Image (tube, rainbow, N blue to C red; front, side, top):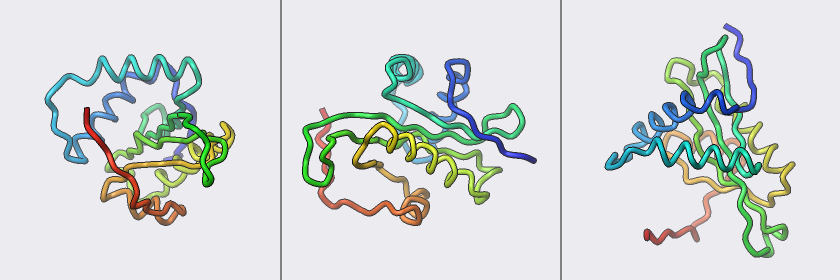
Length: 150
């Protein structure tokens, strides 16, 4: 088995979306809508304008790991003077390939994409399973994060 890595393309979207939904289910998400159309729309638009990038891990032609980084901008602040943020998402590895360093490599590749984009920080809402990976990479908890659902 030789794991290779490459960027997501439009041709990969159906598989990528299926893996994203599998990830959400694994994290305990409640399914009350068909999310596929919204995901297709998001990825098409944001891949086209360069505000979403993803690296994939493959075993042969089979996608076995995914990552994603969305780029957003807000007014600059002291700890992020560019105002550019990377929002990490879609970190998923096929269960048969876990504990092999694949997620770490995917994480590194999308963090480097955020650095190249000019982001001053990367944010993630981590699943319980992902906390060890992100902490080992150097992510720290930010107790200020709050959310208001509309």
